Length: 307
Length: 238
Image 1 (cartoon, rainbow over the protein chains, first blue to last red):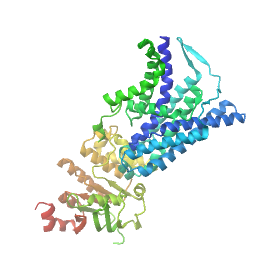
Image 2 (tube, rainbow over the protein chains, first blue to last red):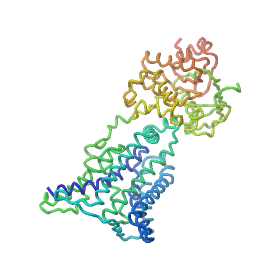
Image 3 (cartoon, rainbow over the protein chains, first blue to last red):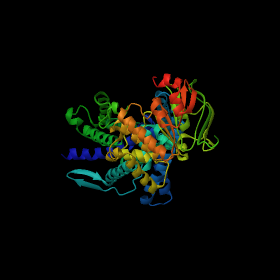
Image 4 (spheres, rainbow over the protein chains, first blue to last red):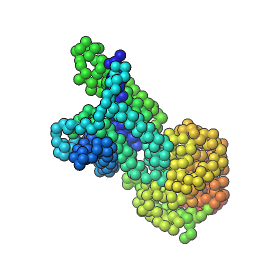
């Protein structure tokens, strides 16, 4: 029972991160029908920027309680700029090209960003400074620490805020209108290019937050960290139904739970033959299963409704 | 003619080398209801799209309110007072009826008057009131056409362009839509109406243009066109 609860906690923490990243995939897909495979790298850049900002600020003698939110804001700003630039330079010129072209470009952007990050920050793992006294709490035999609590609550608040923006504001209405019919949206006076830019920037800001969360939680940052995380978040988006915001959140949390429970119990289930190092297998097993049995995802609409 | 609200000269529009509109001239005076009729594929929709800014013309001039529209992108033409109800209506199926109407007022920021206009639309189209919180995709074709018209009116246009408002609708609904068009026209709105249903269009319009193969072949006062042998033969099944 303790193991079960512990895996649920771990799963929720990891799932919160997946959900935030999956939202970025799903928002862009919803509007452009494009899988932005460079999105995982934006998460990595967010983590790296936050790390650099944090290290510098601590060096200047700033209090960690001030440095942490400041570096998060800087990382978000940097990633928004990056997201804007990626769309403007790599995707916009291909807006009317066959679908394969932007997909390959996305992979290209991803490789470029990885290599740039490697040149700037090096190939080594960076230890993320432990800044706040990270107290552990015991609940029914399981352990949850302050950072994990903050991650879950912050992700929840951000997701609720995003839903409010998308469903309650003029900008959100414009985003949904553009997602459905760009020409009709233009006829309403919507500057479609601007809405697309804003969408990329919003997704990138969420990616920066997720990047900082992962790094703080594991105490590590690395130029390659965005790749696997990006793939898994993409899986989460597909699981929930790509293009659907609630789906991305649900898919993220579910994937986190599946992974964590899977890793926790695979040893028992296989009589010790496989261990928790097989954790990554679950995400891709889920991806394959969804694509085979329910390609539209859990909350995805049937294709007929989109026509 | 210099006081026309919309004046089109030598307009040519093409898709990838094929010229769908081959140099047409026409105008709409303030408060006038003008019909552009012609069979399927005559280039009527293409002409409207270029007026709304969705397709760039290959040649020619579009003057609106005395100014050239050529360099103005589609999304900025709305605030000049140009609204297009596109072919197939272009209703946002996954937005509620109320949200669709608010999208119509997207380029406005006079919140108080937007609320007033919303109320006016619900009086003009009572069917929309009961369905205000429903997803627009669940509306019938006729209701969607009403919604599309109401949404266009929400931008407070001076020139309302309607592309095939009767398409795919039951006769009773067509009658209702055309009554509304007349009602809006009687309030002084300038309307450019594109229709395949020539008789219907000419019955409500003051003037009409007949388009064939990308060119305007005939024009005149509606009653004359309705009586003309050529129009009778080609479009009215006389």
